Amino acid sequence: MKRLHRLLLLPLLALLTAGVLIACTSGGSNPKAVIKVGSKDFTEQFIVGEMYALTLEKAGFTVERKLNLGGTPVAQAALENDEIDLYPEYTGTGLLTVLKLPALSNPQEVLQAVLDGYKQKYNLTWLEPAPMNNTQALAMTDTGAKKFGIKTISQMAAKASELTLIGPPEFEVREDGLPGIKTKYGNFDLKEYKSVDAGLRYKGLVDGEADVAVAFGTDGEIGAFKLVVLEDDKQLFPPYQIAPVVRQETLDANPNLAVALNALAPRLTTEVMQRLNYEVSAKQREPVEVAREFLTQQGIL
Image (cartoon, rainbow, N blue to C red; front, side, top):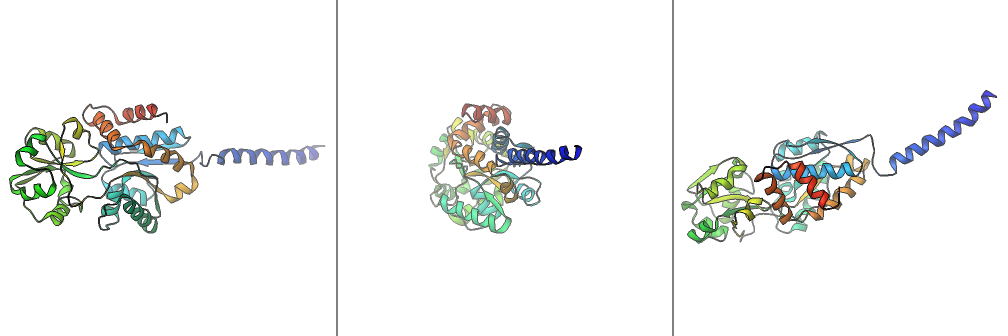
């Protein structure tokens, strides 16, 4: 009789085990997996990194935050070394800084170049990019632009010897920074390049310590201070759309990860990111608070 009970129980246990396995895998994600979300070391990255983490948690994933890793080389190395599974990157940065390819101005061409290059070289995948464009830029106060008669980067280059440019240290050496501007617009000499922490660029500009500031298209201060962004009339700067860069192994094991993050992408416009960045950089709110508030307003949380 006992043997009969065991024989009857074995198929039942097998069915129960199969049911558990199906339930665990039917959502396209592994509930035991921990998705490690990284970010670089500035305001927008903190906000978007938190958005990715919160969105994935809402989709049922367990998330480990590894934000504020450092600059591009550090974040890229973390992906390659399996220390993180994904982080927000910019298409222009991927093209120029990581892949070291020639600059392109067409957003679709840039995206295709990074899709192909990252896949072939690193087995990394770019998900859907947001429409926002955090392109490199140069900005002046309205008063300064009128004083010098400058609206374009060509005009700035022609008057460079009269101008002090303020920006982060890496802008002096980046391919799409000062070296790139000089290559494209002429080998000019500035009156001075004032190297400061990225958070002090706009204060130095509006306080009159500099005439031109290194800017980024989604900086909240552009709208808040009504700054003039100089026209890139020779199209030096490529588009800088933000997107999650993900380890392919992670994506293969968790396909719903892409579904969740791709649904977030179209909501991140340039105007939205300017506003959210200003909430953190100027109003001193916590990035996670700003990210959660936005996602709640959008119905994602």
